[in-house]
Image (cartoon, rainbow, N blue to C red; front, side, top):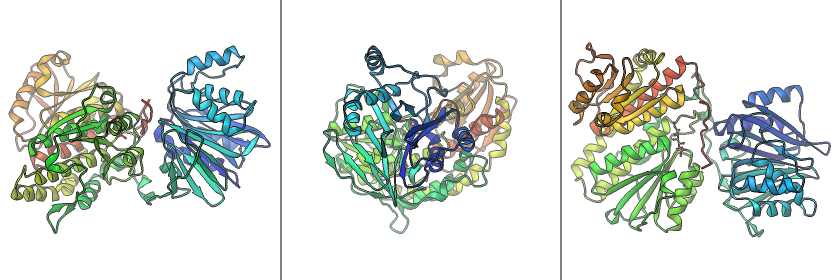
Length: 605
Ligand code: F6R
């Protein structure tokens, strides 16, 4: 992960570097640093912790060079402290890096034999010292090419040179890197989001590419050192949605934006006049599709799991789902009649992108369901279905998850109709039920105060469990993931029917157990599983859309969400589990938007 920025300008760059680093903090927030060129010297400033700390250092001791690089770190090699913070500089070169150099130990040994001295525990310093060594005989461009040849692993790099005060070199293998253009100023950045406040003209480096930036020019090279041209994209302007407004944090803003997310998504894909779904140009004719393979990580994977139930219910297509980090290393039999769907908010997740590359190498058809339409995954897939959720800043995914589910459900309906798996009447009826979804989400958000009270039951808890069956099973997994990442409380998500096969041993007096029980074909069965937990002392927190009396001596707390439709229940039941994780984290005083050890865009394996 980590975020990198580079600016070549005709005026001091450190303030813009700091502003961009603040935008990049979603990629890592263990430490921060920058280096600019002043008076023919590399001026490096670093801190552990947040960009705010770096800003304080600069306030006391400004760095006013016209060319510089900056970094926010998500630690891989070496603890998060000042020494390991980037940039890593020698006397003559300074480097920021996102990714992992897999052969760094081997390279380090070779350099040490030659007398090199390392200051940090990072893999990145190897790059600095290799370039420093190469600069003894070669120019900057040649030195970087020479160094890249020796590296194994993934990287995006930003490099400045003491003796070539006009240039920044960027290079990419595996980790994303973008270039931005402006008048008398050019930029390098981990993503377009970091550059958006400065420009809307962006190019993306492909794997193996290298770029040389000055304030007036940008040149691109491929890995064979051949000069290449890059397409320039005009970015859409969604600056206003990346402001947290009156909300305490981005996560609460994003939770409460979900009626709009649903509305935007529905408006984009559903033509209410024609009573049809605007999805065309399938890469495989719907009737020809043999199997759908859904791939994602974390929360995005959970949306794949919900979709599996929908596809099985409404279509005759076989469905397989996989976690991207597993999929990419499995011995797979690819089939050109399978449609491989990649789900990702950021569109930059390393494992998901690698799984997509694997499919492309095997020449099968790919589709991506992404929030960031300018991302690597979107650009590399045959077919893109955007989720239109707007920028999601909170590290824990909320509105993007809801958007992913909605797009997957819409895709499922369209496929079911196109293959004649459902008839016209059912198609129109299902489309119709969908229309009230934004309003139902809005009503569901009104349960916040009840959830706030429920959250108090977790203050002294040692752990917790989330149980659900059918569509509620993925939501139980998502509930547990959200609680873990936000409140650092151990949580397990389980299919309720699976409890007696092991996890029931965890139930002890007072353990909070969240039972997700919509009024569906599993309802009675879920209640029976709940009784097994009650009999062993579990504290039941019950979430349902059933009219049944909620509170009795066995149920400690009950919350009711509006009933819409069994098929849509996973979308609505997502709201209480998000709010619950949010309020438990708030009570425990956790950093809601930037939970410890995590980052928003996971660009390392
Ligand atoms: C959890 C969360 C993560 C992401 C996962 C995939 O709240 O946000 O589990 O869902 O890292 O990220 P994307 O969707 O960007 O591929």
